[in-house]
Amino acid sequence: MPELPEVETIRRELAPFIVGRRIKTLSIDWPPVVRHKPGQELHQYIQDKSITRLRRRGKYLIFELEDKGLLVFHMGMTGSLILGKAASEPPQYTRARLILDNGNQVFFRDPRKFGHLMLLGDIEELEARLGPEPLEDDFTPSLLATLLSHRRAPIKAVLTDQHLIAGLGNMYADESLFLAGIHPSRPANSLLPAEVDSLHSAIRRTLQESIKHKGATVSTYLRPDGKPGQAQEGFHVAHRKGEPCPRCGGSIQRLSIRDRGSYFCPHCQL
DNA sequence: CCCGGAACCTGAAGGC
DNA sequence: TGCCTTCAGGTTCCGG
Image 1 (cartoon, chains in turn red, blue, purple):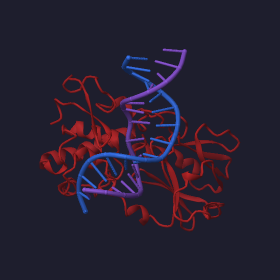
Image 2: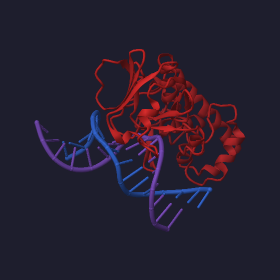
Image 3: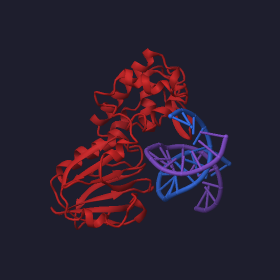
């Protein structure tokens, strides 16, 4: 599912084709995909604007437009941005498309309709609901310790809360907890300082490794060229119920936490 | 503020 | 072969 590494991969691979290009039209194939307060002026505002920069914040992909204005995409669970020619047929489940001035087209494909796009005036509208970027320098072990210290909920649930840390989802929370040797059900504020340190570096390692392998394709995620990522091949526990733990050889278990599958090794994660 | 559960959504996969 | 259930999970909303 698109989490930080997948969105970052889309950003990197799409940027060379769209930064500096002008938007000819934005067409909407499934109207509820647009989710922001006003509504109508979207097409007019976007028309003929050039894209000055492509950014990422958490799981959000941000098209910066000339003269202010941000076109923001969220991939939900199954969203992809696929690059094609202006004349090509839209892939199945296309919810919106962006036609550019260089004969290219960007398709927003999303079978499960959890993804959306919105026009924002300012980045602050996103900042207000997002915690720190886990790969930036300001995400330190002591900051993580502070964030966790007020939470009694299971560490697995806390790690996927975007208000606390921006970009971690179900798969990478599981992978990080495995690398740190921490059981997903542990109350977040029960972690010892050494465990917080180890979790901090596990989160960074997991995300960096996945970006290196261009994200994980476990169901429908595809890169802009239509190819899958490879990060799932390196997963230790995520989506590997019943397979042997790479560290101890024991069987990986699945547990439901907050209605989300949590994969872990009961022998290595305490 | 914190917590946990429901709802949204639809295709794939597994069980019988 | 076909039907039914489970799984997948990011976000928002709501009640305690």
